[in-house]
Image 1 (tube, rainbow, N blue to C red):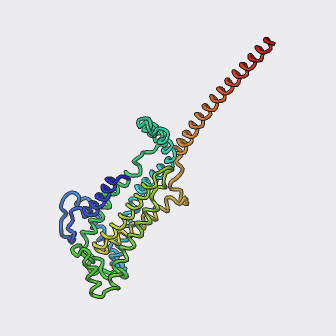
Image 2 (cartoon, rainbow, N blue to C red; image 1 turned 180 degrees about the vertical axis):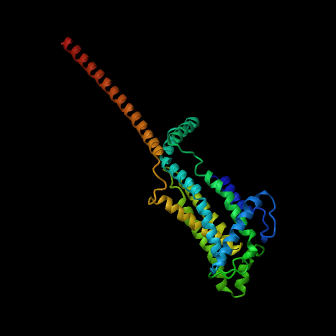
Image 3 (cartoon, rainbow, N blue to C red; image 1 turned 120 degrees about the vertical axis):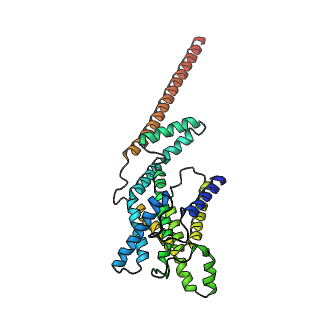
Length: 335
């Protein structure tokens, strides 16, 4: 991967993290009394925030302890279930791409110098397999507005999380955005080591789940793929994971709880989809047929070349035999 591509990805990652608040005041607002500002907040952010508050009030009515923490977890679970069809479509597209990868590599080796021919053959293979090259990206793009809206809703409801504990975390609204990373040194200097460790557990869990998820969902290296490129991609993955960890140290624990829950649910969905126990991926007969046709075509071409070679060798052998017979006749005449 070229350096400019890496810089572009890192820049996009930073922009997503910085802009994911979607215009909501980072200190939070009272969504019950404050009207939404603009179309985005009206149709996405405020409805999600009201849904989150409704779940919390429902848990309070049942005297559920740590209600805000469980409200965030339950809300994230509902969102993941609603978006599961898109996630399933994304995983299916990625699986189809993975199954076609060996044949795509063969086409690259065969038509590497002829760019137009290679693109034409790849397009033909995609069409025969019924696979859209962008099938793994489009569902993700459709999910992004919802995920950003959910993040913005959590930012908006920030004041409601004040003094809301969740097991070892005394306040889900801490640390505030305005503190940056200064709260770490403050707690350390005050001797609040236990409290500091308690607030750092979620960012550490986020980095661990992010790393495991990226390693698990990363496609297998293609045959002949450059080792340097693979190493560069792994380094970039580690860098992005570390950046997410640093970012979550600077946001309230409630938001980090949402991210950790979302990662765990995504890993669970990935396992359910790819484990084979539920047969959610199914059997893509078109992909199998396209791969089989490609193999058959290569076999036929190989057989044709072999037959042509045998014919040429037979003709050459016959010609040599005829030539040898003529030489023997000439010698006999001379005697």
